[in-house]
Image (tube, rainbow, N blue to C red; front, top):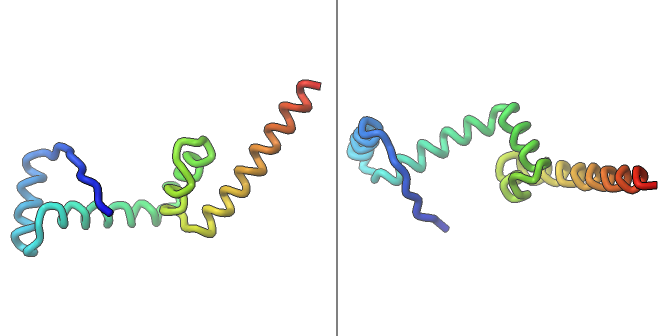
Length: 99
């Protein structure tokens, strides 16, 4: 599945992408997709990026599927289980505070 995305690029970057596309017999989209994928692969190899993504999930800013894409299914399941336990602990603490 693909989604059409519109965004602005500096003219110089677009010119370089066009040269790369012509040199490799690809289109702009292929060049941008490959560059973005390479960037994301590099980011995902960084431990601080993974930690930030976990924090985003724990704060409810991203969903489980996004978490799974970055850290892998098994680790994502572990984080989800931990979040469930943390949430239950928070609820229990709130209940005890009301006593």
